[in-house]
Length: 464
Image (cartoon, rainbow, N blue to C red; front, side):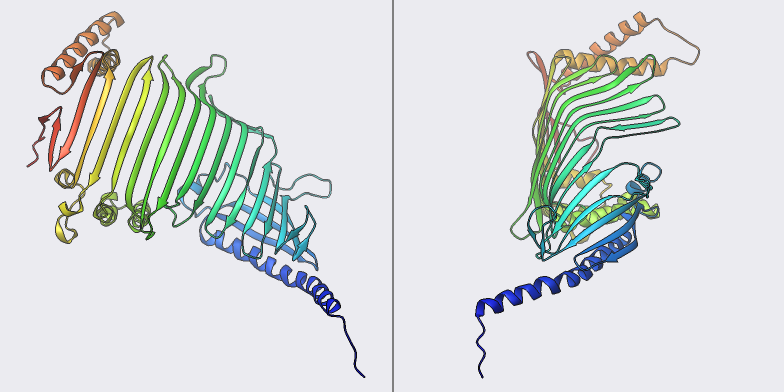
């Protein structure tokens, strides 16, 4: 007797078995991935993540994690100890291949993490409330979105207030895309208060090493300030509308890095009434060896760990960088100080052919840099700004010469400083180190074939 089976029913049956059979398998894979990631964070010295509990179910699982800074991590992360409190996090997973937790999703698993809560609903060992969600695809990509809720924290001599922040992005192997924004943060310690308003940032980059991440980065800050005192508060600095954007990329062989950075600043006010406005910087670099940059980073870390002189550790890496023929430029640097302008540009490049053979050069020897580097720098500064700077330098020198217990009237100090500043400017002009160009003083510095000139005049500085 022959039994005929409809092919569509076979397909449906297979799909049903797949949907029923895969969740527990994906649950095991999810637990394995969570434990592996916790272990890798420990080994990298980033965070101490402990999987305290993992309750694996058929279609869903739950985990309880404890997270704290690593006391044996690098110095930057060790600085978090005492500022970032340990916390316990409850994570809930929905296993694939099909989930409808937050809309239809086909993939490995979905995650939602919140601070762990006690039976009475209060958070356990969490300095703030947050909500984090992520989706893991079968291809290994992770899409995530999160929010940190507003909170206030205070203790003796310390206060922190945060209005809340949001972030989202995608992790695909070593490639990361992320966007973050926060409204306001205020941190007070002792008599100092730091305030940050309107933070927005984004990244689209791929990690090649700890130091090299080609891609684009953007940072915007509406206001950043530091105030001192309580009853009589004094503003040390106030920054308005800062924008930073960088873009870097590898060459076709993936061996050299190049890129550009742009910085814009609307206003910076400093204590004493100095105001910097309309600041613009456009800079670029090219032919930076990736392997050499990585070697430099590791050598600098070793020097910090063993206390060896930095130059001794990084010398091989620096010579490798120079052998690539790197170049850097400041295409434009412009700002105004109390309305008086400053403009500059510069370019420098290394000539690998000028390096001594066999890697015998000493990077502490100025003659090496004179021989290998070539470039040109030009600055044009408003005359009144040069005079202000010269007077400030003269006042500082006069103050240093006044013996303890002696005094001089402020009016006399001002007059003497102006006289000395005028003489210094006249001497620099007579020597050709600054050039009178109408409303500005101009200086051109050039290094070529081991010869340094200022406004066309040689300055050997005793070098052969």
